Amino acid sequence: MIKSPLNTTVKLISLSAISLALSACGSSSSDENTEAISEVSNFPSVIIGQVSEVSDNAITINNHTIPASNAEIEIDGINASLSDIQTGMYLEVETNGSHATEVEYEPLLKGPVNINGDTLTIAGTQLNNVQSAGLSQGDLLEISGYSDSTNSITVTYQAPVNNPQEELELKGSITHLNAQAGTFNLGDLLINYQQADVEGALNNGQFVEVEGIFNEQHVIASEVDAEQAPAFSDNTYTELEGVITFVNNTQTLITINTQWQVTLNEQTQYEDGTAANLVTGQQVEIDGQWQQSNGKLLATSIEFEDTNTAPSTSHYTFSVSGLVSYANNTATINGQNFTLTNQTQYEDGLTAATLDGQWLELEGTYTAEQALVSEVDIEDDSNTIDLKGNVALNNNGQASIWGYVSEDSSLAQFNGQYVDLECQWVSANQVRACVLDD
Image 1 (tube, rainbow, N blue to C red):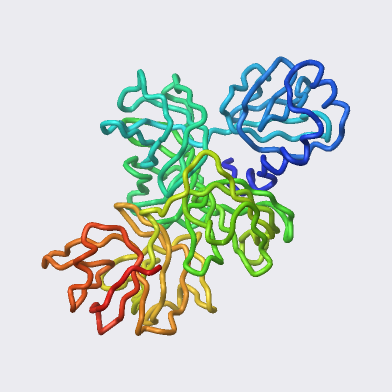
Image 2 (cartoon, helix red, strand yellow; image 1 turned 90 degrees about the vertical axis):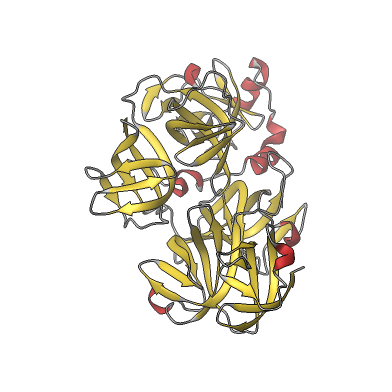
């Protein structure tokens, strides 16, 4: 059965916090220090992170060596030994306080590689830091790492899949759903789910996990999981480390690694930064409590890290306000379609059933194929609207952003740019006096 990312990850992901808590225990993988560590009893019950070293009796994660000679080892659902663990793998390690009792590894992706020049993808997800030497179009590849944007992964471990009948593991957002044919796409990869065990409702834009076999350039799925339901109780203390992939305009909602949504409030504390550092691409460590009622993590503290990724203003987040028409999980403004998903958060008492005919603000992420809504709010003031995205020429040769055009040509100066604008709304899809929103 496919595990929800929250099921596995939100138990405890805070390698930096663990580093601080355990620094007094030692971090060497030598026999002497391993013995010393084995005598302490303050290891967390679950540690998830990237392997930096493996010996014949211990495993090192984030510079902390954990005795593991008697641990049960499982790799991709199969019993294994400690010698099968490789550096770069992201693992889940369960301990009894002083020793590892269980070590489990699941790949982030396992599927066919698509090569387009210097760009390599699996199921539409771009692979960064991948070792491409010797890879050919369609080769099956196993990937471990972390998501650092809507459709991008930084690879920390890779291995060829030599058995063409080995079960693949894929993740992504559905496009081109054809319920009658029993197919959908993950990026450029066709998924046939006619015979699959499906958990949750399938719609375009839904984030899903898929297991199946690669056959003649498509995947025959055995399992499709669209529920993404966590398996922990209300107010569970949670530590989460990852990369910010979405921030809403009010800085009250962020998404980590494209999958986990975190809410922020006046009590949220910041370390090594401020709320101004909440930008896409920033790596953070979050402490908080899981809220079962709304399916989000409430952050009590956020620590900004200076590793792995460079913070930047992302060119794949959007914001748009306007009069919405709604049907079949799609909100439309000015003829532009925005897909509502199983991750969309509704504010101000809104539901999908109440969106049609209202003036709303939509925020989210987008790719070349679709715009996915992360948050929906009621927009009280229609005189001034915020528009974030790419400005481009429409079919009439006018500079346009999300279907809006400017009667005073104030959008023309931004043609071809990704911008965050404040504009005055005139009527219908007309705006004026568009300026950069500082």
